[in-house]
Amino acid sequence: MAVKPRVLFLCSENTCRTQMAEAFLRDIAGEDMEIVSAGAEAGKLDQDAVLAMRELGIDISAAPTKAVDPYLRERFHYVITLCDRERERTCPIFPGAIWRQTWPVLSVRTLVESGVSHGVAVRLVRDKIREHVNDFVEQQHRSDKGKRTSKWN
Image: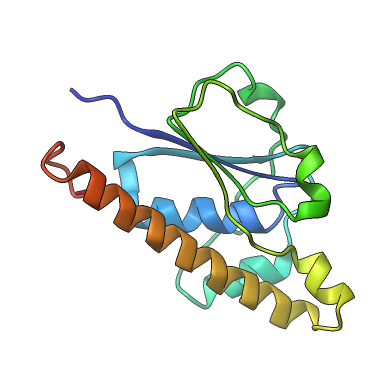
């Protein structure tokens, strides 16, 4: 049996962006990948993020927020950070990852500070993350064509 690809989404608090990314990818990949998210520290799950995802039929209401510490010694195939430039310092680095990328997704906090309402900011962030996840899936389909026989291909 083939090894399941392991994906880790990282941000500062694991309250919104990485929760959404994990849920979107889990919705697409199902059991074909091991998908987790974490933050430099664990915050409180953003209830507007719960509502925004529920609008798309995805329930993250029971998702625990997690600090990255338990994952620091683990190996991941893909490590994807979703940190603002000013918060990149707090995102841990995983030198053993096969593939690392930062997705430029502004934080809800940054958007709110620029005058956008919290609910609108969450939905803007959600939609941007969905685009990135779809692009990631497409990239995997292209690079893995013919290598796996699961629904992931």
